[in-house]
Length: 217
Image (cartoon, rainbow, N blue to C red; front, side, top):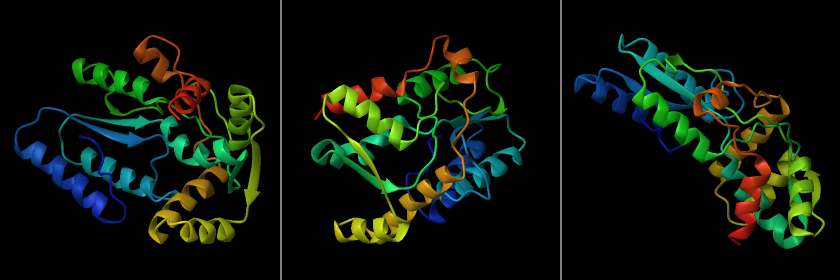
C-alpha cells in the first residue's frame, strides 16, 4: 500500500481506508510505504501522518511491514531546477538529509514483498549511506556542470512569500517549509545499514541521482 499523495488530515483517512479494505479482503500481510522520520512530533507534516498510519497498522493484529523509506533523492529536482539556470540554490536554512534513490527503495520493497521473513514490523530507516545538506548538493552540482552553483540561505518568511509570488500555492509552501524546519532539527540526519543489507549492494550515491537530473534538462 503506497501512502496517499495528498496533504492534510485526508492523507491518514485515505491510508486507513486502504489498510482496512486490505484487512477486510483477507490480506495475510500488509506492507506500507512509510518514511525514515515518521513521528507524531515531526515538524514536517507528512511524518505525523506516517506515524498515525503505522500505529493503525500495529493495532490490526495482521502481520505488517512499515517501510521507513529514506528521503527520496528525486525530490532534489524541485530544489535545484532554478539553481541550474541561475547558479544560485536559494532556500531556507536546512540540515543534513540521507537522500535515498527510489530504485533502491523499490528493490527493498520487492524483497520485502517476496520474503515474509525480511523487514517485519516497523523497519529501521532504509537510507543511503551518506547525509548531505543543500550546501553540499550545490558543491556537487558545481562539479557536475562545471559552473558555479552558490548556496543562498534566506529567511523562512522571505522564502515563503517569494515562492507564493512565483505561483506556489500557500499550502504547498507551508508544507515544504516544514521540510526545511525538520531538516534543521536533524530529523533526517540518520544513516542505517539495513537498506544495503537487504538489497545486497551499496545504495546509489546522491551524486548519481543529481547527474541523472542534470542530464534530463
